[in-house]
Length: 120
Image (cartoon, rainbow, N blue to C red; front, side, top):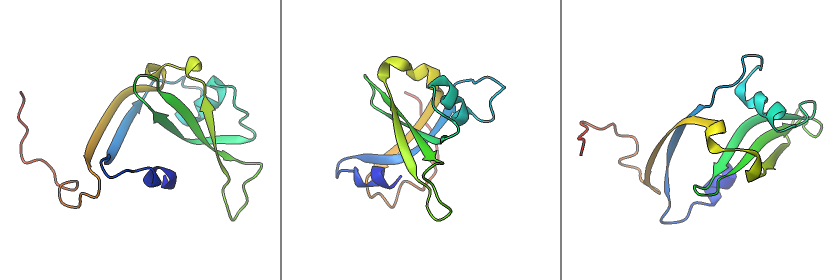
């Protein structure tokens, strides 16, 4: 996300994230679309295309949506819908989380795989 790239400061770490989303009912087309029902989002107007989580102690959740009423063939209109922290628990969103971080601007180590792993 371009906005996220602009927020990176000199001492920030950057990397990759893989998330296992919490289980969803089998009746929904995709887990992202499940959010429209869970948070009463009008699916005729908004299509959830991603989620943004921020914070540790007091996490915030935003749904990244295409506003179908404002999108055109030339440009998708993207809207972030912030969900009140009283309406969700992080464990309702994620079942697992794998985060790998490196120094900002690292061009040497981020693409290397470990040769061994040592447990302490």
